[in-house]
Length: 430
Image (tube, rainbow, N blue to C red):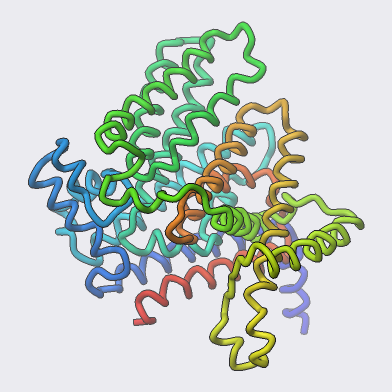
């Protein structure tokens, strides 16, 4: 009995809960590494689509012929650059080809810790804890445990932000180091854009770094170098393609905009914020009433005019609920997700207003929102992987709002369990 009381007491102590979260995050990464190592299945899901283009790069080199003949992948050639370089080690076979992403996720966490440390250097907070929270984003498990295309550009985008941080710190002394670092940061961002074109939105977002810099010409030079070098890396490829993706995949963004896909992206973003940092959301006694009212307005609008459908767990629920209810179920969920998405955007606006004197925070906030908004342009389908690629930005954005509590431990565990299950469904738990 005394042992149980002691356990409950230590669980409520913030220091103990922080240790539990850190240990859980490390254990989660080790588990991901081990199960990825044990997955010996041949390439599956989207994996077989990307590997032939590695051989295409091997055959033609980085040439116009290679760029125009990339097939069955919308992302750019960064994936091929990485796996061609590592081919002597991985032989383009599982599990080696999958472990590349798993190892890169570790590098992302190291970079996130370094970025967050600079953001919070005036505060005595553990910087590893926010970085480890990336393990609680369920869709990260899928992209890090399989040989997919999201992780390499996520790594280079995170590297570019860290290098840009260093560059901006060197504007008063040894300015040439700042310029050199900004060139490296731009190259890193350019590679990220060549990995997945949505990362191009970081370029306009970087303009917010110039707020409150009147008379600081060196900061202007550094940010302009960063943006210019990034565009110089990717624009020649886009010109050859005649767009933001290989010509054979241009149909993916054909047909204008798909509002529902954008709404889903922001709803998933709200889910990430709810798992990692519920303190991000603004709440008072009127909030729930306003959200209910908004849902009541969106429900008939969707049922009679918009006709957006979304039915998670549909097959399982059909065995429980009557058929009449299940026919309208997809129309009930869609306005709920739209309500959540609008609430997330409302909170983002107010957090931006609260910290409008912090250019770096506004840069990350704007970049995150723009990354989610790129889903409006994906017309063929929606995938949670589009949201996963914004995960490093979310970690930087939400780090100041993470609160240590017993509830945080529960959400931490829940996020990792959902991530593990979502990954294992592709391997059929074998």
